[in-house]
Image (cartoon, rainbow, N blue to C red):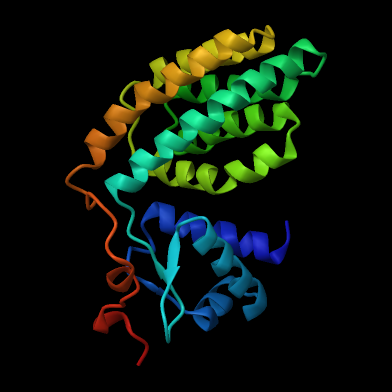
Length: 231
């Protein structure tokens, strides 16, 4: 992993965990010292974080941790319906044409083992890994590039929402993966739609009251509270 990728992952994970709260000013020199890297990879990581929707940049200051909203969450599910349903169908067709689903089945088995063990810490990352493997199985580089910012928003979402029924989620993943592995494109698409919509309502219900409903105007979003400005 490059220094930029490592810095990106570390800062992203701090945002997802809540260690870096919305409105926090991300100073390059401070992060450089904390991560023991030069300012160049930190600067590049911050640019990628902004592209992926985790930060905003305003005039006369650097990156600020962005406040997620219910609108953002709903949009993630809308985009997932467009992209993940296509990915499930393409992955199934790839398997039907001879592609190996071995890695997908391996990740699915890991997820099922975690659910059985009750390990809460790794469930979110394994959930994302299943979706990552489905995209990888498509063999479509453009599709995997397009999904990147959405996948990182999903990491935030899975890290901040408690699954109502992990076993049910696991059963949905198993059914989806079985359809893909059987090369059943239409069934995989239908199961992907059901899987996404089954998660939308509970996720939004959990986050209502915790997040603002809608994004603020650009002027307000780029403003740093006086208490967080560099002195």
